[in-house]
Image (cartoon, rainbow, N blue to C red; front, top):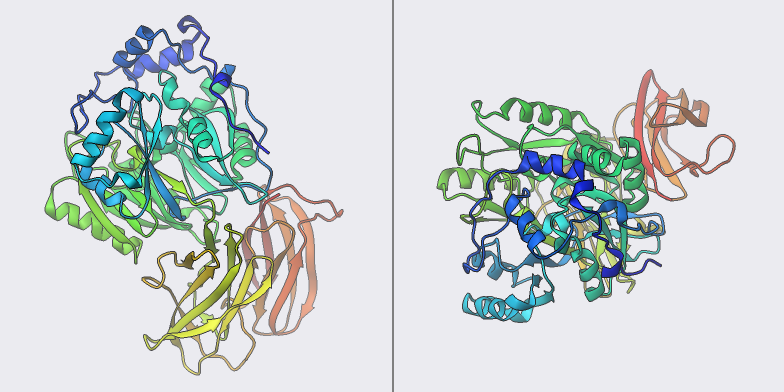
Length: 594
């Protein structure tokens, strides 16, 4: 098992004269600090970029900057590893005092999560007094008393994974602000306080430049590759390998940032809303980043998500709040069924932005909060960090969206991290907006559950969702805000009584996906034909033939045990099923975790 990283394992000994790469970066970023002060007027807050002011302060304290080359990396967690998405169940939110957030927002947080607040010993009494004076329920506050350098808990805070034993683990990267050594130690201190094991590696990264889908696909801007090369001497392939080893990331989509200036964090212009939905900033044609944002939206829309579908790209218009400074509506925060969005005291444009979220993420309670500190490249997301529920109940499902000939088999993965036992998994559906029908799903082995929606005599619009409950009292669904939202597809009339998965002459599907030891590949032939089914890796190399020859009309299922033609287990990663039949070729990605 991994151990807690102690303060003594952080070494800050290298002198400034041997930090040429860091100093070169700082020379570029040496711009005047933004004069933002906290709501209680206790201090001038350090901005997102590093400044000469904080370097002077660090020198005055006799501290040296964080030196990644001196950090002893831990071994990766036990595989297979799953990195948690922001929309998964959380129990708390991590912030820092003095604040970079409005008290109205803190009061909203305290009615449904724990507010983990990092505060120095010198400010602790003032924090308690000011929280009480501003109506914050301090019984919902847990204090982490220790020094910090800045308010950017998203960037330096803990990243969460579930390891191969199903235990929540913190992964601790090197915060890419070397003159903020106190911030860099927060994940270890938080893990020690909460009793969560901490695993550290020595690669530079930052939380604002990272988003993951909880299903082994992640995305960052090229800042991740550039800093890993300049500060760690790592190539992109080595970065990808580290992300796989420590976070379980099977596909790391690193895209070029939208600008040559700024902090280059992806959360300033894009946000995952679920496994295959991305919200991307749109700006006026006169903004410098207009063309780049249109290009990135097109690029991301062309990529395949972990569901096997292209990313569904939604846009939110971000008006100018200053010269070449668009509003940062994408810099929002998930906390369970709520999405908190920064707003900018412009009634019409704020309302339009909130409605863009509601259209892209139906069923969520979308709440806007204005604050004078929100900037174009940082806002609410940058200053907060969700704390994942170690005992979460998670429901994973690849929605049916295409026209499908009925009956239809609905499959879901239900993972009970409380280990109290699953008490119910229900499929609920309705036809053409009628009354909801409930079908008790049955276990298909392991964490897999399935239930069928019966066929129809005429083409029918079907709405459906999955709800699960465990003995701890947790309830979760898919979509995650069900029954406030649901999935929809058109069921085509069929004479068969056998449940099928997808429409099309031979359109396939793999389940479960991701998988560890065995995956079932399902497809339907509407007429007899000779087929070829094979597995390929992401480089297009042939891995194994699974089926060749004639097949009857109807549904078929063929299993793959994750081994190649020689019987060897293939490494974790992304592979593709390729099915040829009835003159059509289909490819479907599948992810193996080890």
